[in-house]
Image (cartoon, rainbow, N blue to C red; front, side):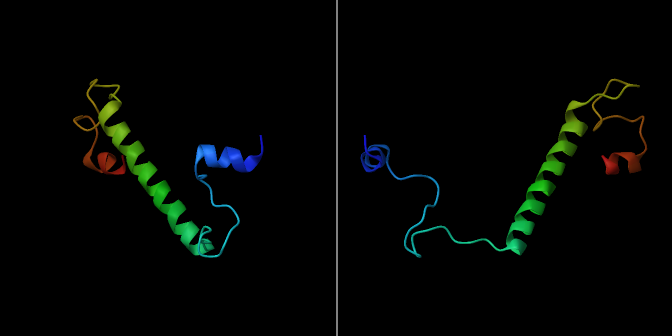
Length: 79
């Protein structure tokens, strides 16, 4: 089966292939890519912090870290 028939049957592809300048994907500069990666890392670190505070239990009092009174306030700020 020729490729063109498969494409018509499946629909438009999700990736940006070669084509006219207006129809292909826009190029992303390194600075834009750096900002996007740093933003994704910041979101993931905030998500991991939320998991540690709400899901993990303190070894001493068996409470979630968010409600634990065993730790000083500055430790909770670091978490």
